[in-house]
Length: 119
Image (cartoon, rainbow, N blue to C red; front, side, top):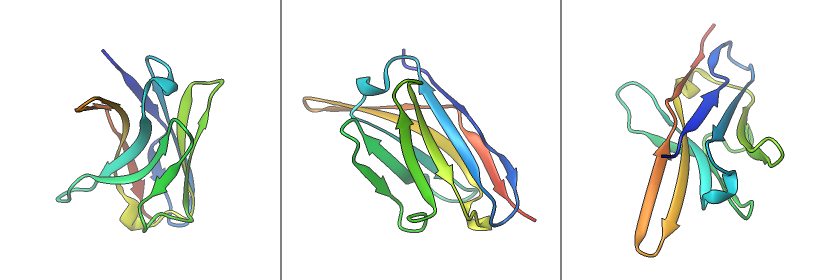
């Protein structure tokens, strides 16, 4: 059973920064991609950023240029560095790991970490 351990959420003022981390129970290279989703109250979960095992990244338009997803292979951890945070970034952030085999997609989820941007 895959486990994803997240950390790094918290309360930050607008314009501030936070870094989220996600470490899987296996290797980060066991997955086709890893990423971060978020869900705000009353809204659907949305993909914020992802990184494939080949290093290709993808960002939600509203966070591009402010957030960076990267991995530390030695620490077997994927990070989401968030700068210039806005109140609209407030949400529960979930780490996601994706495997794709012939005809089958499997998603694994972390427990979620709260990010609150408020003065």
